[in-house]
Amino acid sequence: EVQLVESGGGLVQPGGSLRVSCAASGFTVSSTYMNWVRQAPGKGLEWVSVMYTGGSTDYADSVKGRFTISRDDSQNTVYLQMNSLRPEDTAIYYCARDRPCGYWGQGTLVTVSS
Amino acid sequence: EIVLTQSPDFQSVTPKEKVTITCRASQSIGTSLHWYQQKPDQSPKLLIKYASQSFSGVPSRFSGSGSGTEFTLTINSLEAEDVATYYCHQTIDLPWTFGQGTKVEIK
Image (cartoon, rainbow over all chains, first blue to last red; front, top):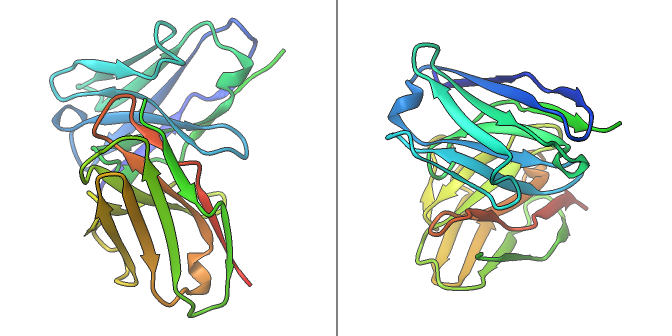
């Protein structure tokens, strides 16, 4: 059974950093596209980043240069390192598998506030 | 960036009524258009991929159609459990984008 479990969310001050994780089971993260998608409170969905099977990556313009997606094949886990955080980055961060996103985690809430 | 515009933003329907949601793309995207359902306080779920292909386990009352710039999600005979917000999503061109969502409620 495919499972995705996010963790690492929390409260961080503007300008701060946070790393969220997505632990996968039932498949290997290196075998498929892995995405991060976020949802600000009461708002719609926004695609953030993707890691392709070969390890290359892409980002939304809103996070390019600040966020980095990575994966640890030994832990079967995907990460999103978020630096220079802004209040507008406040959102639930979901990891999702494939293109299109056929499997989603439950999300982890990141709040950027002083 | 490809902009996806859904209509309507909100729809209130009676049980067993047919629901139609439209998604228009700002440029042609072939059939690289997908539909998700997000129930309150839950993660999104994929319903339809590549315009008309049902995802595994999705009830047959959900169907999709369209190509190019205009797409439709149809819910035949709405059930109470279908109360949710529905999103379209394109993956033909980066950045991958979503529509603004259509909220469906029971009248």
